[in-house]
Image (cartoon, rainbow, N blue to C red; front, side, top):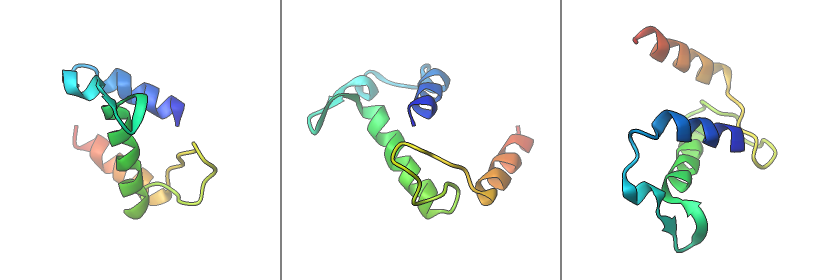
Length: 76
């Protein structure tokens, strides 16, 4: 998870707004964008793009997720 969030931070740094770097009251020390990314992960699990029931902190892509990524990459 830490590696993924690091890559998100680098890839999205020019897209983030000041508010994205503010800490949430419920999770001091972690920026808002970090929380949003983790909720996005939950959505990807529900959509079958990431595997569920992985050890805490492990985000593993599924075959469906790889296909989705390949299609997105081919559209660039």
